[in-house]
Every structure is written in structure tokens, then in C-alpha cells.
Length: 350
Image (cartoon, rainbow, N blue to C red; front, side, top):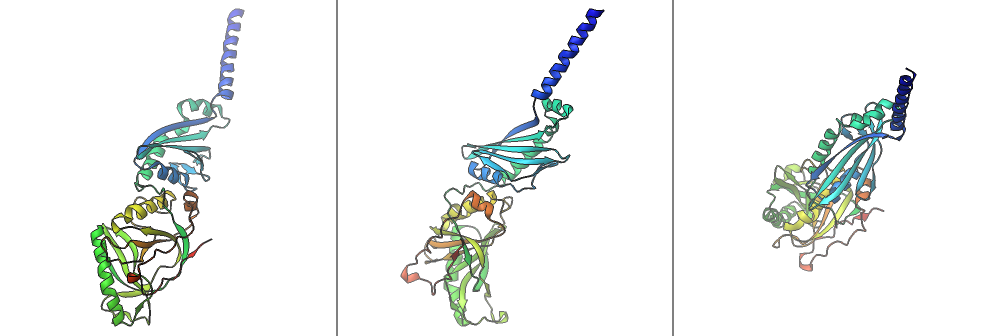
């Protein structure tokens, strides 16, 4: 009988020893991960994840608690759980051809409760959450523009608003339609302005070029000098002001055919990566406009332009992803197509 008792005591000691070892030497966190295939460039994906705002929802009851840190191809952000627990979400991004693979890992700190420590073997509370976290980030990343901002150069400038005479129009998004509309504006608008005693005070501008229901819509016209006409006196056209304030400025030299791929797509990717533009819609969150510094009626449209994005909100995240550069020189216009007067200068923001 005594031998049986000793055996039981030995078994209990072994079990307690194994339990203690599992408690002290076992996992301190519960974690689960899932890998996604994202049809977007790795650079854009990594930047989007790295700039996720504090307070964003990772999964139901899981919230980003502090700004993310980036080390190489890995983004890590502290999170809080609905029950007050803490943990981390980690994204590891690797290029896969023109797309990328993203490993999403969700972790929860287990604390001192032994039951939680033992539950880590099956993933604890994060096990049912990882699918939702992966689905949410997959939807968000696949809404990004399928473009990279690599090589895009922009400066931050301050622009003064000026009186503006314009005609509002929309066309389809083909380069042929856009150049046709802009070419007609060069021929028609100055004559209308002269009849109303207005003088062009700068080059032709297309304000708010944007896509609405597959239509490219804008206000095309000229800054002007002269007495503002009454709206009731204008059969064609309208008066207002050019956009003013702080803006992102890009200098573009090329045809209408290439401007979307070389400027608008990369800038959209950069703004979306910085969480400054909603990637789920083609509607622009920023007012944009183009200034034409040469003959906009030539085949293929203007070759020398400034393109501006009027700043909306805090652009510090943008600067962290892709730092601005010193403002480039205004494109030179050939003498025979020079504008009536030089545009108001843009002042670089320190």
C-alpha cells in the first residue's frame, strides 16, 4: 500500500513539474498567422501598412494602439483587445512578380493566468480573429491603385489664389478627347474674355481634372486681369478663383497619353499609401489642376506642364514615405507660344 502511495506522489510531482515547466517555459503569447496574395506592388503595400493610423480596426475588438514601426519588409503595430488585453499585429511583405505576398500575424500577450497560457496551444482568443483580420487587410490592399510611386518627384509649395475665367466641361477619358477639348479652349476662351474686357494673366489651366462616372471633368480657362463681369452678363463661361494654399507640385514633360501613367497613377498610389486618399473609389479626395506652359493645341497636347494637388490634411505621413524635393524650374515655353503673362510664383515650403 505504501508503494502505491509513493507511486501516486511521484506521478503528481511529475505532472506538477511538467505543468510548472509549461507555465514558465511555454509561450507567453497566443498567435495565429495567415498569408495573402495581393495583386499590388510590394512598395505600395508596405507603405500603406506602415502608415496605418492609430485607432484603426484590425479585426472585431482589436485596435491599433500606437504608430507602427518598420524594419526591412516587416511592419509591426501594438494593438489592444476589447477585454483590455495587449498584443501586436505584424505584416511581412515580400514581392511576388508584380504583386506581393503579405503574412498577417496577430498576437495577444497572455499574462500570468495559467489557463490562458495553456490555451495558447490552440491559438487562444486570436484563433477566431485571424480570418477577419486577414480578410479586412486583403480588401483594403487590393483597393490600392495598381501602381508604384517609385521615382515620383514632388515639391510642397504655397500658391496664391487668383481671379479665374473658365468654362466647365466633361469629356471621356481618352487622350484624344481631352486634347481636343483643351485645344478648343485655347481658341475660344480668349475671344470671350476680350469681349468682357478681361486679359489673360497667366497660362491656360485645367482645374480639378478628375474622373466622375467615367467622365473627365474640369474647369478650363485662364487667370485674368480686369474688372470682374456680372454673372448675368456672361452667356458662356464663369468667373471664380484658381485654387490657393499649400499644394504638392509635379513638373511633367510628355504627351497627354502618358500623363496618367507617369503622374496621376503614381501620385494616387502615394496618397493612398499614406492614407490621404480613399483607394476604394476613383473620386479624388484632393483638388487637382494642370498649368500648360506651351502650345496645348499641338498633337498630343501640351509637353510642359505643372500639376498641382491642393493639400488636404496632415501630409507628414506622405513625407515619411516619399520625401519632397526642391521645387523644379517652371517648364520653358517656346517663344511663339509663350503665355500672355507669367503665372504667380509658387513658393516652396521649408
